[in-house]
Length: 289
Image 1 (cartoon, rainbow, N blue to C red):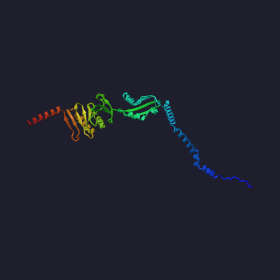
Image 2: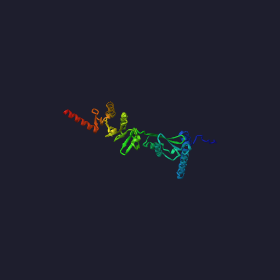
Image 3: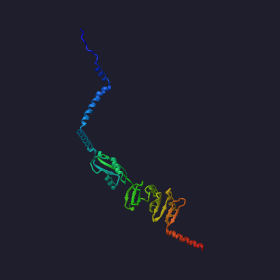
Image 4: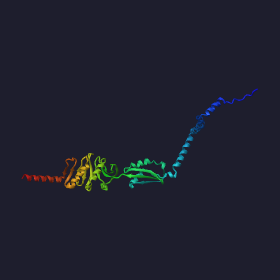
C-alpha cells in the first residue's frame, strides 16, 4: 500500500496571505498604520478623562513658565534714548513698570505704537538688548513754528503736527508765529516765507493765514504785507527789493498790497494820509491863486 504524502502546495488562505505580504502597501500598513492606530486609540482613551486633560494642561503650563522665566530671558530694566527729561517721563508713563519681567510677556509692537502715539514723538523703536534691558529709542519732533490757536499757543513741527503747548511767545521767540484757520496745513509755505523774509527778521511779528488761501506778513508798528495766493515768495522778494532800493518799509506805510501782481498798492498810516491830503490841498490852492 502506497503512503499518502502531504500536498506541498500552500492552502488557499496561506497563498492569499503570502500575496498580501508581497504587497508594499500592506506591509507598510502592518508596520506603521496598525501601531499608529493602537497608539491613537490609547491616547484618545486617556485624554477622554477630564482629569487627565487638566493634568496635561497644568504640566504644559508649568514647563512653559519654567522655560520663559529662565534668567537669560528676563528683562530687568528700562532704558530710554533720544529725548529730554520731560519726554523720558512721558515715555515711562506708557511703558510697563514692573521689572524684572520675561521677554515673552512683552508686546514690543504694542509698546512701540504707544510711544509713537505721544505728541512729542515722531518715531520710536523698542527692543530687548543683551543684558536684559528694554531699550526705547525715540526720535522727538522738532518744533518749527508757534501756532496761535483759539485756546493758546502751540508748538508744531514742519508738518504742522502738534508737539507741545507753549506758555508764552517769548519762550520760543526764535520760531516764526503763524495764526489763522488753515495755518497748520500751509505751514510749509509759511516757513518758505519766513526764510525769504530773513532781511526783515528783526521786524517780523508773524504770518496770518487769510481765508485759508493766502498769507499776510505782519511787521512791527502794525505794518502788513498782503501776499497773493499764487507764488507769495516771489511777491515778498519783490517788496524786499523795492525796500532795499527806496526804503519802502521805513516810511509811514500801513499796508503794502501785493495781491494783484500787476498793480501793487500801498496804504499810508492815518497820520501820514492826513498830512498828504493837507499838503495836496495847499498845493491845489497855490496853483489856483
